Image (cartoon, rainbow, N blue to C red; front, side, top):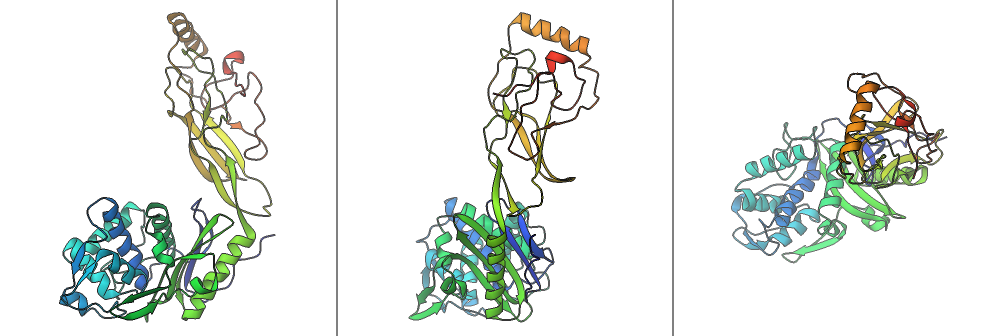
Length: 401
């Protein structure tokens, strides 16, 4: 049996597996809450995306405005009128949580913090962050500035996935500017060698927040906690989540990409059967001592008629836990099969008409791969393999390669 999720001081939290994107445990993870300086994850993400696109350079000089210099809250300690590189600003934002650095970068990229916030919101929409809205690049309080634990975990995963060249910045413990050395506020960078990022935040309204990622035995987990009661409690809340996820859950690959899951009959082609499967590995995050194994079910469009190009979607692969559908993946052709000769095309056309393929839309049961996903038993010749139509002996043959 899997024990219940740990008790935390945080108002909202989530534990996510980075590889699968699966949520392991959560509490009020979609609630709209002030993110404080977790906002700067998006501030930096927008900037690094611009760098990747060639619209911004790390060594590009930025002139610090008086407006940026006057920004309240945590600071990098920039001087008004001075010049600082984009690279140094990124360090000052991530490590020092500098509001002055955030505004200076925003003004340089977009002309103002308001326009930069619009870029942040557009990026949030593109990532599917439906419970997030930014009003500024700093995280300073505003009634219309909010996010959620789940959205911040998704954003962290995007940073790790899309901006791997910049991700090591989040593991740095110190940064010195203007002869002032500041330490990263993520206590777990000192306490847990498997933790390599990301960001903390705090305001009176938000409480103590943290988004963290760790890697153990090649497996990455991401946590987001909102509204913890202190600096130490947000660290301990995060540590409890990481321990829970690594101790009681694992990743299991149910089906490998580009491997043949079935070979349904193909009409009017040079080959009688078509190899079908999924493009990428299908991996789920599961309890280490799961009560039952997930079930796999294939639904193949019918009739399949050549020519068929490799990668063409021909159905779906559904994974179930009992009656609950966990995930659906497109089922694709794993090979190119050109049309057959005139005799094959003509004879198959006649057979299709005789068998009622063109008008019969009755459903057949899906092909069950086996009692547990990934342990396929080959269907016998003459078995139905997909949706639509009826069983007609040889012509419904499915072969295992």
